[in-house]
Image (cartoon, rainbow, N blue to C red):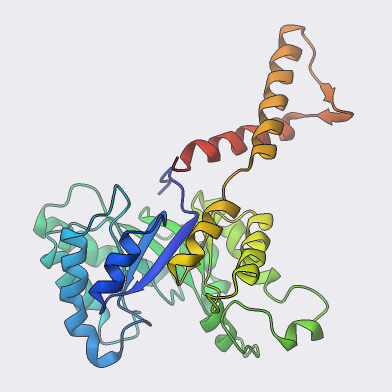
Length: 305
C-alpha cells in the first residue's frame, strides 16, 4: 500500500495515560501512535483499550492517521486489542502498528481479522499496517513481510528487541555505547540497510526506531542523520521534544531543493536544445541524477507546511 504522506516523526505515547495522549496530539508529530504494547503494564492493558478508543474517537488528530499499536501476536491480548478498539471506535482507525512481526503469516493473520471486523462496522477504506522488524526471524523475512498484504504501509526497525534477539550487548535502546567502539563499523548498518531495501522494493516507507535518552538532543539528531543518510523516511520519537528535530532532519533542506530545481531547469533547457546529456557546475547529469532530483521535490511536496 503506497500512501503518499510524510512520516518524518512518529510520536509514541502510552495508551493508559489520557493526559500524555492529549499532549502528544498537541505536538507537530506527523504520526501520533497510542501504544497498548510496551508502554502499558500487563495488568493495565485491558482497561487501557477504552482510553485508546476514546482518544481515537474524540481526539483532535488534525488530519493525521488515527493510529495505535496493538500487542504482539504471541501474547494473550492482541485479538482483544483489535476486536475491542475497532468495535469501540466503530472502525475509526486508520493505521495499526504491529509489533514483533516475525513472518509474513503474522501480517496475514492480522489482515484477515481486520477484514472481518471492518465488514462488521462498515469500514470503507482498509486499515493500514505498520510492521515492526524486531528479531532475527523478522529480519530474515522482512522482504516477504513487506509484501505480505496490501495493507502494509511501512517497515519499522525496533532496535531494542532486535538486539535482544541476536544477543547484541546494548545498554540503552537506539543509543551508542562502549560496544560500538569495539566493532569496526556501524553496528546497526546491516539491519537498517536490509529493512530499507525491503521497504523500497515493496514501495512502502522505512522508519527508524527510537532513541532512549530524550534529553540528549544532540545524540538524537545524530541518530536521525544516520537514518536520513541511508534513505529512511522518518524516526520514532518517545518525547515531544524530539519531534521538531526529526521533522527538521527528515525534511528536504533549502540546499537540496535548490539543487533539484537547478537540475530540472537545466534539463528542460537541454531538451529544448536537443541535447541528450549535459553538465551542471562541472558535473555530468544523467537519468539517475534526474530521478534523484524529482524524488527530492516529490518528498518536499508531501511534507506539512
